Figure 1 (tube, rainbow, N blue to C red):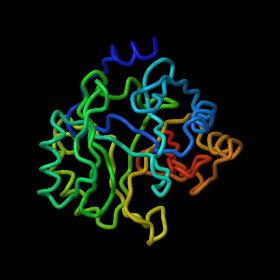
Figure 2: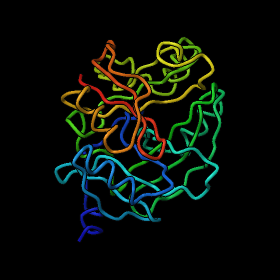
Figure 3: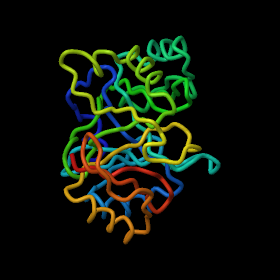
Length: 245
């Protein structure tokens, strides 16, 4: 029944450049299910290629994927929606980015690709078919925001504005994607990266729960232009943020 629900799931279509999915690359998916299940109240169902889809109140919100190479970091990755992953990869290359993994089919759910911007920050593309993206967001236990911490915000605005102008700067834009200097929150030697934020009602209480579950606090709750955030890692070292908008 889980596989049938996955294949029949239809989320609202996401315009190109909208954050539409997040996944965690973990060495131990079962441990990830226990951690995030307790932290966010997620339940899980099987996906293709050994991953699991996380559900919040029955709606899909994220995936947990087993790392195939132990040398790779444990990390949360954001995916941006696109109607044509191949064409967007070509535009990324032309703008100075890099294609790490070219477009490939992910079962019958859609097409994915892994890319970087010119500064090296890694993100994914998602060309949805049976699963266009989040079934729930902006609610506790679901995706709320993604922040790019970069060394050059002006260059980032130029790169992403060229790729995703309407989603970021169009007249009807309501972006869930910000850009900030890496030194605003992290040490100067931290490489550029995306930080996925999940919505919570009480960041302080959520931080305490992360610690109880074996995670740790990188940055305690602080104020941002988009709400109160805290940066944490799970019990396998994957970083993410907790956010009250």
